[in-house]
Length: 251
Image (cartoon, rainbow, N blue to C red):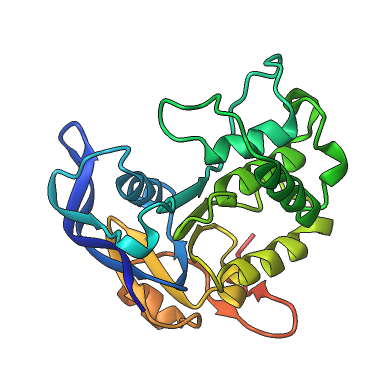
């Protein structure tokens, strides 16, 4: 599989504080990587580096592009927290279409085919009936689905999701992961989540991030491996229903 993103010996942080040190990671076509780790361990910093939102203190970030995909957006992104102006007069479908706009061309005229594509994505997410609604009328879960449509409408090579189930109701959550598995046939996915038991049921590989990054080429991982990676996450068990085994607590 061809490379999409390469991080080589990346060290990054804010001001003089180092958050991530000596990180190496390669993302290839059809990868489905689950990113786990404690709060403050550097998961968000990792995402910001890949998105180009912060520059590393040292190391090399490479985003690959070739003639075959030069007109295709490389990275689509669904943030954990979505901030919108609730009073801004824009429809749900127009928000999705804005994912096709290039820098400096936000208000381009979209074709009939592009409008149909946007509507079909909303239908896929179960909210086609909201296409003409104002974005400010939506619930948090509905808005999360809209912005997922926006993130994928340009068919990116890599989709990055930051806690995608945060605002998703239980009824749609299983559908969301089925949709992601289908999307993974045509794009790589990196998913940051605290819901370790669930994501390891779906992802192909795991990146443990806690100031450093340890890449595990499997979706199963033992408590001993987590301890070796200095990643304080509860042990994961697999079965028909994804779940997490909790340690005993003394009350």
